Amino acid sequence: MNQEKLRKLRAYYHSLLGLQHIIDDAAKEHPNMEGTPVRVLADEIARLRADFPSLVPEFRQGDYYSHQSGGSLYFKVAGIRSYLAVTLASLKIAIEEPESTPVTETREFSFVADAELRKVVERDYAETQRAYIAKCWKSVIILSGGAIEAILVDRLLQDVARARSASKAPKGPDITRWDLADVINVCVELGLVSPGAERLSHSVRQYRNLVHPGNEVRNRLTFDAEEARIALEVLHIIHRDLSN
Image (tube, rainbow, N blue to C red; front, side, top):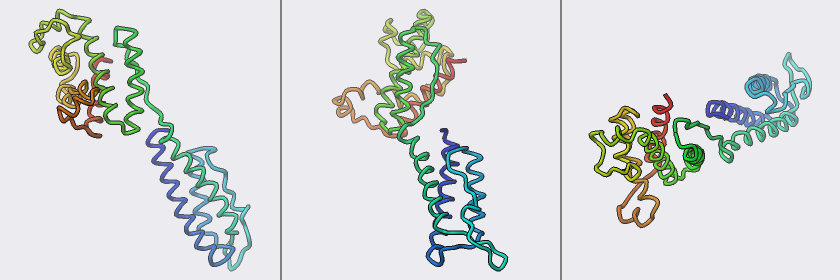
């Protein structure tokens, strides 16, 4: 279920919860209630079932009809309350399910030349999303940084001479040993990825140091949701640029 559907489902849930309070209050006064809230409930359920077929049972007003008085229809409160209890329980489960079993986005990294490396990157990308949903910020940064480095080094190795001749290339000839910042800078200079990756790269440059707790303490590295979000965004930028 995507975020838009989840927001809509939550809106239905809170709407029906409000109607439940109204009906509960009516039950304190009399076992039967005038039909206006019931019609509102019927309309809301009809919209809900149109948007989410089969999620909740059908609401048939006639099943709860009691009598007519003074031109108004009256309905049995107890039955309506039972219906609402079942319906709200179904909605609550549907709302909570995405949090316990999050759906992650699948992306292909076909531009990675090394087939085995491509499998690792695709696996780690799925894990990165799960870590982000779980708010494991350190894991997000480490996984994103590793994927970014692997992808860009793979691309530079496809044209080693051009990579080494870049003005921002470090002196070391072994591209696999370049710092991530240097790798990103060279890729931007060569037009492989957009400058946005370079501007945001500060959030992932120290990802290797986060692997070792001692480095994290000595270098006083700090990170939170914002750094994790940016690290994942850099990975998305690179994926977009290299997919074109």
